[in-house]
Amino acid sequence: MPRKSKEVHECTLSSKLMNKTLYPLPPNASNTARFLRVIRTLCSMDPKNVKSKDFFRNKSTMFGEQKRHAKKHYRFVIHPFSKLNNVIKVVFFISWLWRFYSVPVMYGFFFRWMHTFLVIDIIINILQYLIFISFFFVGYVVSKKKEIIIEPRKILFHYLKTYFIFDVIAVFYDDIVSVYKHSENLLGEYYMYNYFASVVVMFAYFTRFKYFMGVLEDIIKMLHLSKTVFSLLFHLFVVSITIHIFTCELFLLPKIFYGETFPNDSWMVEAGVDRISEVPFVNLYTEALMITVCFYFGASHDKYAFTCPEEEIVLTVISIFGRLYTLYMIADLLKMFGLVGISESKYEQYLGQLEEYMSSKNLPDELRIRLLKYYEYKLQKHYFNENQILATLSEHLRIEMFLFGARKLIEKAQLLKTLPRTTLASLFASMSTETFMPTDIITKAGQPVEDVYFISSGTVAVVNAANTEITHLEDGDEFGFLVTEDGKLIYTHIAVETSEIYYISKKLFLEFLGAHPEIFKYFENKVKKRIEKFDSIETTLLLGGNDILSSLRSGKLLERQAVRSVNFEFEN
Image (tube, rainbow, N blue to C red; front, side):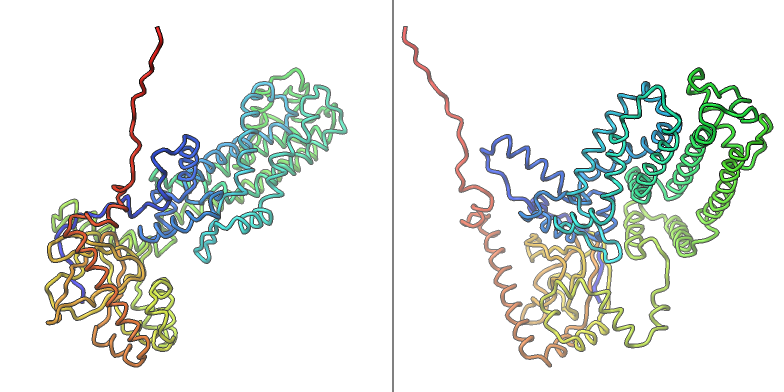
C-alpha cells in the first residue's frame, strides 16, 4: 500500500526544460524570426487556458499535447486551447453580438440607423472577415471521443461541412445587398425582399448560436464566475434578442402588408408613427418595443386598439412564443437552484460536509486547499458511489470498465501493451488505484518495497539517497523495481502534481509475467537500462554537470556573440 507523507517537496528540476517544446532560437536570430516565434507561441496550447485545465488532468498530458502541436506540419494550425484562439473567440463574441442586434434593425427599419453607426459597422465587418479566414486554421475538439483535432486537412473539411456556408452568408450577404441599403426612396417591391433578406441573414447568424453560447461559457469560466451566472446571462440574452427581433418585425411586417399607405385602424397610425420619414428612429423603436414587451410577458396594453388581422397575427405569435419561453425559463431556474440535478447537488452537499469537518478540526488553510483540490480531482465535481455501481455489474463488465479506465496507461506503457488481453484484464482486476496530491511521498528510499507502481496520469519526481532530484517519471512509466540486494528501495518517489497511480503486489505482478518468458525478459532489460540511465545522471550530478553532454545541453560549448568595438580612422 503506498504511503502519503506531510513532508514538502520542492522541485529542483528546471520547469523551463520540462515545458520547452519549440526548439530554442539562436542568439543571433533576426527580428522576423523572433516575431514568428511569438506568433507560434500564441498559436500553441496554453496550459493556463480554462479549457486545458478541464480537458487534461495533469501537466504531463498537457506537455505531450504541446509536443504534438510543435511538429512542423502543424505550424500553421491554431490550437483550440491557445491564447490566439481565445482572442479569436472574444472578437467573434463581440462581432456576432453586435450583428444579432444590428441586423434586425438594418432590415426592419430600412437602414435608417446606418448613418449613426456606420463606423462601428465597418470595423465589425473587417473583424468578421479576419475571423472567417481564421476558422480555416483553428483546430477543434471532438467531445464524445475527447479528442483534439489539429490536422490541417481535417480542420478544412470539418469547417466546410459545418459552418462554412452559413458564415459566408452571414459575413458576405450584407455586402451583396448593400446596393439597397442606402437608397433613401425604397420602393414597395423591395419590402418583401428586405424581409426575406433579414430572415436568411438572421438564420445564418443563429446557426452559430451554440458556438456563441460556448464562447460565453468560456468567458464566464475565465472570470471565475459560477454556472448560475452563465444560466442567468443565457436567459437574459435569449429574452432580449427575441424581444428585439419581434420589435423590428412588428414594424417591418405592416410595411410589407400595407406598403406606403396604412389603414386608419393600424396601431402605427394611432401612434402617429406612420409617416416614417418624419419620425425619429428612437420614437419608432420605443413604441414597437413597449407593445412587444407587453405581449411577450402577457401584460395588458390598452394604449392602442389592435384590430387589423395582420397585426393581430404578429402579436399572437409574440404572445405564444413569450409564454412558452417564460415557462421554460422558470423550469430551468428551478433546476439551477437545486430542485433538479441530484448529482451536482450531492457533490455540493458533500463539499459542505467537508467544510464543516475542516472547520471542526481547525485545519490550516494550506491543508484545506489540498483537500478541496483532491476531492475536485477525484469526483470531477459530481458525486457518485463507484463501489456500489461496480457491485451491480457482471464480472465481465467490471473487467471491461477497469480496462477502459486504464486505456491511457495501457497505450503509453509499452510493457503492458505486450501482454495478452486476458492477462491484462486479470492484472488490472488485481490492481488498486490511489490519487496523490503534489508533494505527497509515494515511496521512500531505504524502506522495503511490497508493490510496483504504474503512473496512469501525472508526474513523479525521483530523488536519490543524497536528497537530490535526478529526473521525472510521467504517464506510462513504472517504478518500485530498483532495490538493493536486501530488497530496499534505492530512490524516493514524490508526486510533483496530482497523480493517479495504479499499484499491485510485486510478487503477484512477477507471477503474471512468469507465464510469458519473452515479456519477462523484456522487463528485465528495461530495468537494467533504467539502472544505467539513473547511474549516468547521478554521475553527472556528482561531477557538477561538467561532462561534455551536460555542457552541450546547457549551451556552454556554444560560442556567444561578442560585441566588438569598431575604430574609424579619419584623415585630416
